[in-house]
View 1 (spheres, each protein chain N blue to C red):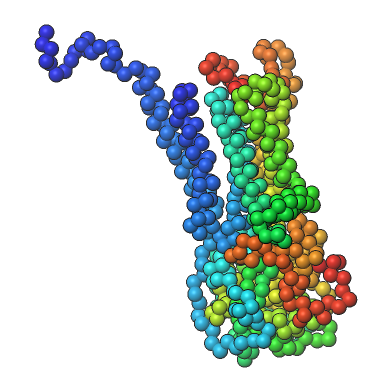
View 2 (tube, rainbow over the protein chains, first blue to last red; view 1 turned 45 degrees about the vertical axis):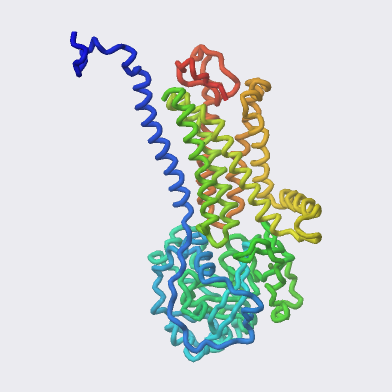
Amino acid sequence: MDEHRLIKKAADIRSSEITDRKLFVNRRDFLRTTAGVAAAGAGVLGASKMLFAAGQVAPHGRKLEGVKKSPFSLTPEQEKPNTWEQITTYNNYYEFGTDKESPSLTAGKLKTEPWSVNIDGECAKKGNFPLEELIKGIPLEERIYRHRCVEAWSMVIPWVGIPLSELVKRCEPTSKAKYIEFYTLYDPGQMPGVRVPVLRWPYLEGLRLDEAMHPLAILATGLYGEVLPKQDGAPLKLVVPWKYGFKGAKSITRIRFVEKQPLNTWQESAPQEYGFYSNVNPNVDHPRWSQARERRIGEFFMRKTMMFNGYGDQVQGLYAGLDLKKNY
Amino acid sequence: MSLKTIRFIVKPLVFLASLGPVGWLVWAALTGNLSVNPLSDLTNETGVWTLRFLCITLAITPLRRMTGWNAAIRFRRMTGLFAFFYGSLHFLTYTIADRFAGLDFPDGIVAWSTVKNLAASVVADVYKRPFITVGFTAFILMVPLAITSTAGMIRRLGGKRWNALHRLIYVSAVAAPLHYWWLVKADVRRPLIYAAVVAVLLGFRLYWSRAHAVAPRAASPTPRTSNPTLRVSNPAPRASEPASRT
């Protein structure tokens, strides 16, 4: 026999050289399983990343002209404003989704120009007005305000806007007007969040007329000297700095003067948790969490929440004789 | 899948995959890929992963019974311990971000009073806020299960008592979605999904225990253990894979 033949006959292969069938099968099994588990692992990671989408910083908008300083504003030395990124990626705007980053991802579609606001109810100047016309001639002011969310976080926000009182005067409310209602746009075509019945739409907030006339209450149209980003309530947002953030109705399309106290959306949703007044009050806890402290976005240690969000000297007169524990 | 493949290949890989979420969270926190309120994200995400691992753990017995793939049981201890792991991280982030960060530090941060105040703050919160009470219950009930998860403890306790003890996971699995539900403001869709998954998984067990209780004795020649979750549906489990190892 020629021992140097390259190709051996079957009989020449010793049985010890043959890969054990079990190992052979196991190897395939091994590869398949490894691939499977690796895919599953990647899937888990991918899913966690998808479930947790980071927000998208708002693009910068048009610079606003002729913005005045205001004695009602904090100075950057008193309170350092939060960043553009913080203010535009962490929003509660349920019409665009209930996650904090959802509005920054989905509000881009909102068409804010042209915009009109319907004025009705107990006032002389009723009608549907283009926004520019409605606020024409009222000087824009910078108002750096503390913003305290009912969820116990806070920011400092450099709004630009007009005093609400100026607009109220323009509408010429009648003697029957005791309260004002503010309605947010309801448009399923532009607002993916409203397809889910999480709250009653359109979103409604209200103020007593004397609260609305207070010089601290504004209608914001800008942020950091620029046009207000959509996730923050463009083009017109109510800002009442001594109240919890949810009082600040966004993208306002209707303002109505009424005689009776409005049933605002959150109060309707959970009356034992949210009242009409919703003044920032460290002594009255939310039924599910404490309001004594707040986390300023960007900070680790919590701050003590201030009565009326630190605006007590200016606004406490509005609530003289009112039991704030009952009227939360 | 052979025993060796499971033990040396699949289990280590599942282990690594289960560390994925915490790995991702740490990476995202360090690189600024969380939201501008990262403490809230860490608390929420660790909580959600606890729920997910609880569901996975509860899914193993139904999976095994329906597919006859008995080797599935070999992953149950690991997924259960990962549920406890994420639950511990969740409790830890809550303790640090929600309690510690909200303390006063009359004697400075490194002080005995800090420890006392932190403990008092956690206890008061668990006592005062019902959704925290429920979440804390879900977590604390997992502690004895984690402690008794070793083979030695199973031996020491005996299968029957061990099984009875480990049914506590059903309580955690009900309490955890309730805790989540209670905490959201208005959008209950996600807690509802977890509640539904848990309901289905526990529903299987209820159904099987009923079905077995009603079934005529003649139909079941093999003696049953008291725990429906440990019954072997596969008529011929391989001898090398004892069904009730864990």
